[in-house]
Length: 375
Ligand code: GMT
Image (cartoon, rainbow, N blue to C red):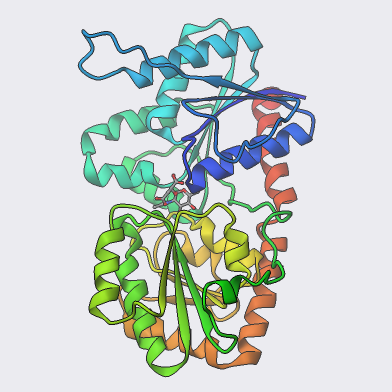
């Protein structure tokens, strides 16, 4: 059994979810897990006997113009590596976590192995600040092993960073114990949704890349032909703009803004179709969550989305920004009961086969074994 450190962004977000769920599964296998982060990861919501949490505290001396979080993280990583005798430090995101991990490794006396998992925004961030390119590349090339959550992300990383570094694809997974279709505990009537209403759902952090207005416009088209409701779950920078658009389109009675929600599986369980129309998406964990609850999905032909949705089998892949086509696919699924059922069943099967937790967990464990014993 190994002693494994994990660093992630602890806030709500796919990468934090994957890092935390992986930590919990590894602990269940008997590994000793040490989270090093700035907050308790939000899914770490109860006591787990072999999971420890080490908080990064940032000193704020007046001389610092900006509190040096990255250095405090590296110092805490080095402290934990030494004291807890870690074998592996698995960081989620190259920026800044891989760079901090490498600095920590240089500061301590152990031959700890660094594994970096890329989740997407590392590469997206390059579009905003290309001065970070060399640092991201350094973090990736100095790690003992690198994984990415989709083949598309591997291609993008190699292309943008001009690196030959080998990167393994390990797909994301969902906790099937939490994500399965749950009985409707009167939730529909609570939200004023009628039995005959088709329920469409979108879940995101409402960043511009998620193109939530495209979701609303698609819904507007669908709602002209069939009774329907749209659940918008999450919060973020584009929230007010979306509110305004719903108002301008006169859809206030059909679109429900639910804000951030913890028990998303219950909302997915009353949904008939999931929309994720992003312009950047390395994987789209929310798609997998929907599929596990038997919800067919429509996503854009972007990033890793076509690796998750099997076009024509578990939903459809639409052209980015093509509202007419997206609405056509949505109506096709919602108006054909047999097609909807076959896609819902296939979606659940895909989660259990291609993205099975057991398989993904064993891929990570195999990787740990390789860095510890083979290399
Ligand atoms: O999508 C976001 O804005 C959040 C971000 C994160 O840090 O969780 O998501 C990224 O990682 C997820 C887990 O691997 C992926 O499912 C998301 O597709 C990816 N987001 C992007 O690539 C934009």
